[in-house]
Length: 102
Image (cartoon, rainbow, N blue to C red; front, side):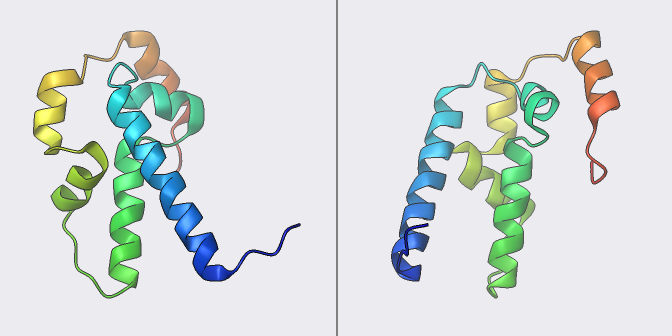
């Protein structure tokens, strides 16, 4: 495995995370329940992980603030614009595959 300076590695990881956020912001057709059912995480999970990392680093961040960072807008605005009602099939799949912490 290639040795990467820790600072450069952090920069690369941050760039990859920003690209992931941009991708998810552009793919508003991909619903959170689809992400959960396929990958076991969603935009809200990313926001929670971001908030936890901030708090571990000594920065208080609210749930709403971390979600706005991930969604690129207030969460309620994103929901009103893009969130669709989950189908019965999606809901059933979620209940069968729900991660233990959800």
